[in-house]
Image 1 (cartoon, one colour):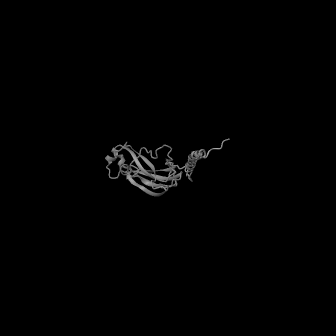
Image 2 (image 1 turned 180 degrees about the vertical axis):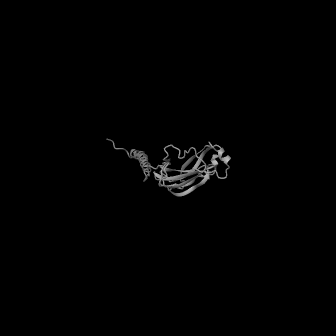
Image 3 (image 1 turned 90 degrees about the horizontal axis):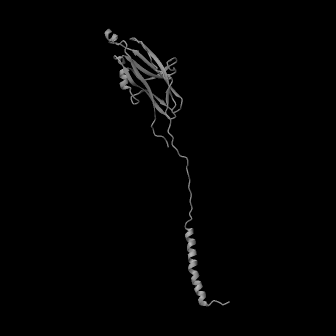
Length: 208
């Protein structure tokens, strides 16, 4: 075997040097891609709307269906309103859909009281606690007590399903100041009106 000359050995060394540098450079490039990392996750965030539900114990029947009334007559009926809302809110009572003939709407006076006890069409055991809808003729109630903003008999609910509030409505047929002919002219007159209880949830800031 021939021994490489000193010139051949020098060429081999020079030729190997660039390869060694490239390999070393590759090692540095690969190493620069590594890093320390850390993370944390708070999973499952969600927002769900609350439920606002209001019912009463009238079973679809009108509280007041009174026929053949005469001047001076009066009457009372009770109703229990239940909140099945799971968010706090405010309930107000108001009137809608007044329909009348012969001016009877100005002669039927009505007031609504809040209280405890009683049930639909039965005021046995009812005890009044407030009277936020004072006695007014139906014609005036239909104007001043016509929506939630102008409603009365306010009831603050806590947002616990099953909360109840009893109400007692009292009406009277008042012909004070009318002549006999005017009273007679009202025979056969009819008046109807809707009593509405509306629940609106509180819009106060909620802690996130």
